[in-house]
Length: 107
Image 1 (tube, rainbow, N blue to C red):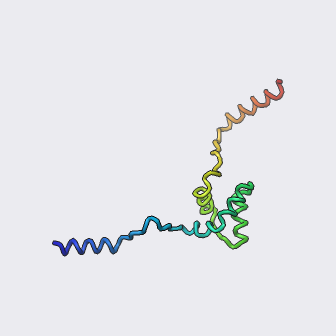
Image 2: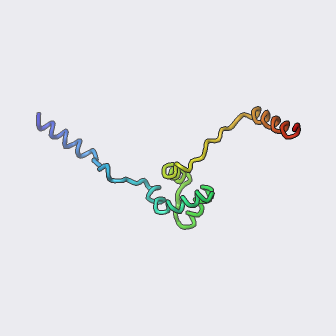
């Protein structure tokens, strides 16, 4: 019986990994973009669009997909997140536009 337990324990230990929690495992986008994090942050603070930043990085030989770049931005610069835009149906937009025009001309 103890031989079976030892075999099972050995098989479990062989097939599982025990990564230390202090060890930071980087995903490929982080290993690519973390060296230029300060540059990306300064571009975002300057108001440069994310698409333009991707093109600037491509010029320097840093190739990253748009989705990976946006995930990097979301995870590392969450304080720069903008408010969500809510799209309204046309009937509400038209109603607000008419109200706005009436405010201008009926003063």
